[in-house]
Image (cartoon, rainbow over all chains, first blue to last red; front, side, top):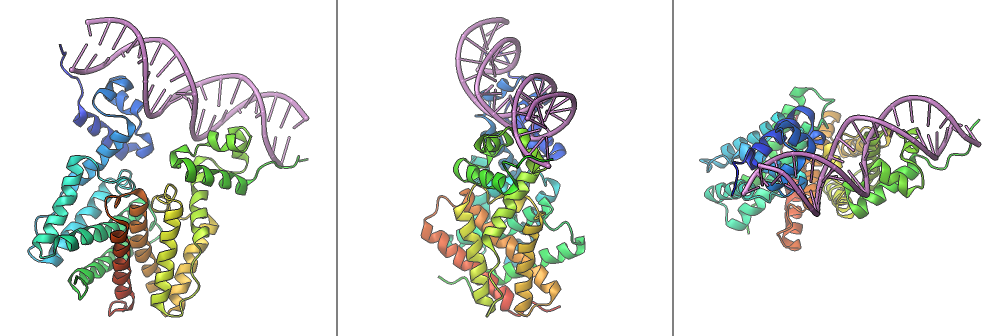
Length: 184
Length: 184
DNA sequence: ACCTGAACACCGTTCAAGT
DNA sequence: ACCTGAACACCGTTCAAGT
């Protein structure tokens, strides 16, 4: 008959996320997270399935911090908000961000965010199939760019150049979403 | 006055790459690679600066396996070859591939491949600045898609659907590269 | 010059035990 | 129910030593 829990899943994810932000993803270990919570590593297993589940939790945190911009008044504006939001998350959490391209969204909260993006695209007038496809393609392109930037792949270029890169990418996507190319 | 070397950088990268392909990126450790070469872990440090340098070596291997398609007869065809080549590498080496979005190309051989892509775009008629920008954007989008696919982010969809996604992405990029959008 | 051996502070996870 | 303690097979890297 239980004693009160000293930690829970949320506290564990908080600690892990902070650790990743400050010392990098490699610093996120079961031992290190436990240390931060004044608990032994094994205490974490009561609340989380292991290291993999911990990383899935970080993906969830990234996505819920992002949140999907609500249904587009107009499609261009929605796209700008959505892409800008993703890029902002990448800049705040460069160490954690690559996980988004490495791990599918598996936790319920994580899947919810993706579903909200699809819903917004449907509200903007796409069929369900087209909305799902657009979500996959836009997220791939934007995540690819944001992850590249966060990882320092464009490090050698001036910030202004990279900002203009991003603007150009948005123009491409706008063209693709509003252009003569979403039949079927 | 040296004894003959039993291993070298190439042999180490061979072993690491094979290990990653067969058992995943997490299986690539200095200990495990050394074990595969019948050598102690410390022997690797003579030929490589450490774990980070080992991973940079894997990035180099991915890029040199890809090789840039030679200068485009026509731009569309070049784009198809280039994107298809990247996707093929991702499918052959799903475990290693994400490194491309996580680590900038730092070794000389790795940078050479990227420079060849830029050169091909210049041969196709872009200015140097435009070619560099196009390389950054196309590689971000294609790497983002290929990494997503390799990581299983589209796992729930039929192969035919994902193939059509890729075709659609290519149409977007073609539009962007040949459309009314590469002034300045 | 190239590799080994012993060592250190870590890591993920298990198992049985305490309260 | 929740957490600890001891333990295991790992990990990256250092240092001094062998040939």
